[in-house]
Length: 181
Length: 99
Figure 1 (cartoon, chains in turn purple, orange):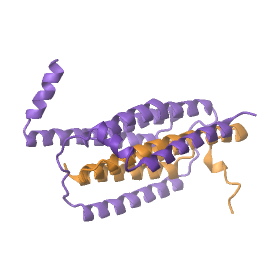
Figure 2 (cartoon, one colour; figure 1 turned 90 degrees about the horizontal axis):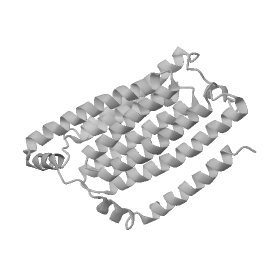
Figure 3 (cartoon, chains in turn blue, purple; figure 1 turned 60 degrees about the vertical axis):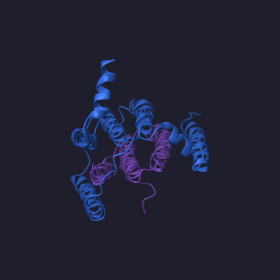
Figure 4 (tube, each protein chain N blue to C red; figure 1 turned 90 degrees about the vertical axis):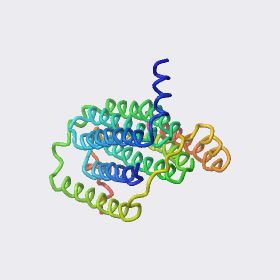
């Protein structure tokens, strides 16, 4: 009950206060996500990398909710953190012992990968700053699940059916590839 | 909120994912870096959807999530097959097709 009352108070926040709260939430999540992503691609321990991936995926779910995409945020938590990370952990444990760490990787390889990453980031940031210098996000109500469902089952029904067939094909393909015979 | 703060966060995550795909040798870690790239793309889609006040961006993000789930299933099956045949998932050892 008190949580509900607090939510009602949130509505009465002036636009400026809400904006500050949104920006603070964004900054906290962005810093956490970037730090966890950097640790994920540099850590030696593969299980730790999977757990850092959980942090990044949770941050992405938070960003979705900040953008008013509640259904996508909840789907992100269920599909990614609930299913895909568990699949990764199974994959790591089934192949464990084969690979201690990336000790043998050459410094040159890391250097070139880092250069490519920095180049990609530089080009994309320059293009984005050039194109959307100070475009503001419209402050609007979060989109409801009903709107998303209406859109999927009217305008995007053909891609939806294609994704269904793709999932079935991937399921059968994964079983056939991994089957022990 | 500015549109660009979401787009630049997405660009940072995308670049980190590209680094992970190129620098790591463990097959499972490469798949995880690909997930990072797909999530960066999803942030872009949802941010543009919010910018245009349209739900199409969210619908496309949901499609990307479904395709990513299919990709992880097949990718991990291939990594397991690789482990069963070679007793290793070091991707630098898989170079039989190198010219």
